[in-house]
Length: 317
Ligand code: F6P
Image (cartoon, rainbow, N blue to C red):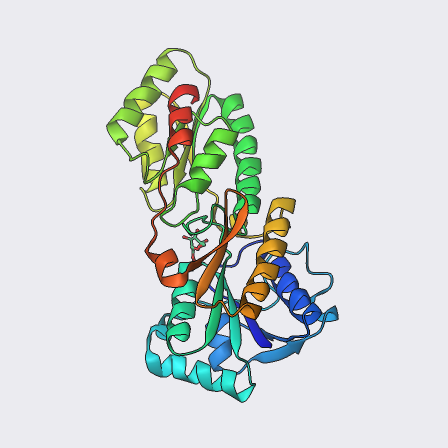
């Protein structure tokens, strides 16, 4: 087969390991594999290059994506996708493996509807693709967030402060939930927990009065203005308070072994599925087993809150 591979949307650690797995599994099968630069934007611009095994050596442990990535909202227009299809036809590429999040999946679905064989691989730090228990990049971002929160705890404790730490995840609370648990945060606020400001302020005040030296609040992005919240905590709780937005640091860095392993498994699986004639699907792991789901279904699935972890934080935060 002649297979293209691209990365699209926000970059995630482990994307390179995924590209490597796709290229190497394809070549081992006798396929010709093409790297497509800069996501769907690069595809319509014809930024396409045949990859050898050597082209993907020394990238397994590197963050970012050697292919580059982009967001292309215009890909929703059929005329734009037609340009993409022309480039694929020009290079005789019959199948496309698209690594990214839900925007990437939507692009892959539309191309599939237009007759291109596509497979989606979940590559995003947000862990917000419900057709896979974990996405490539989540483990590394979680490690980065935990490292930062541990450091913030040191200074919070020394100064007897409250620290509010905003982590990424777009609308998914997993990075906040997991990092909050792993770092012993006193409060974890996500779309799933809900945000009751009055309750938080009252609890922090009670903690302060009870003599607790510091408090860690981990909160998902897109919930509230954390700097404003820090001011209110200072006024109402008795704690000095500082807010830290971890930001893009969570998207970079050397992928963890978990992300590399997931990348290797899903990259090879995607190539295998193409050879079995299965396309228009998103691959993932469910209960640590490889699974595929039609992309339209994958996009319609919602991330259910993790009941066990939510019960756990009620007891031990
Ligand atoms: O999807 C990954 C992510 O980092 C989200 O966590 C965040 O909301 C978003 O991308 C930021 O997007 P951009 O890179 O376009 O600013």
